[in-house]
Image 1 (tube, helix red, strand yellow):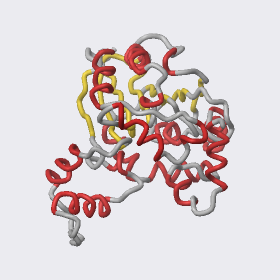
Image 2 (cartoon, rainbow, N blue to C red):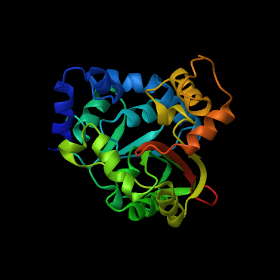
Image 3 (cartoon, one colour):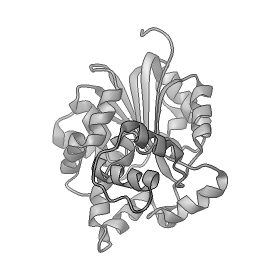
Length: 272
């Protein structure tokens, strides 16, 4: 199947309505985009970005929910999305931009060959993108090339494995992999090597429970309960917030194949 066909299949499955909503695959698209803008995930992403105005590149923009959010916050947005789909690709973003009256330029191209001049963008946002790279090293080098000195890259919700043997376990657990075969995952070290090898200075590496960016749509309450059971034992029943140091400690030691990480980097040098 194509990615569009896989998403259509998911939307038709009984009992999958919440998963569809959590993935922002529901319609009307503008309502899904507004919901994403107001969720904890985007609020946390916003906190990692400098303040607009400026030029933003949204790589692997999908349906355009992040492009919408960037534009609504005041960025001049270019959405990069190779899939032409009116449901999950470039045409969906164009429709969303028209309906919301937001100026979002849509470019249909792969991230490994960015059609932009050097040092063009102030920020680059990449949600669930790095693990889909055909060539991770080349993609990171291209992102670095088009980012201005002093610019920020925020790459969020990328799947992580501890070793190559974990990859089939993760792929077997993914709800759509068996339909379209487009998922992948890397080790944290592989992501770091690709990013720093391209020239990025990594300011932050966020593990699964360190930020709502990675654990959304799970809640703070459910995360603390899960951490309590991991840290204190299965019989942990207390419904109380735990110290952040305990949550972060458990988070960094998780080994679940496909868990989510986010990376924040910058391009060295003074802004142009």
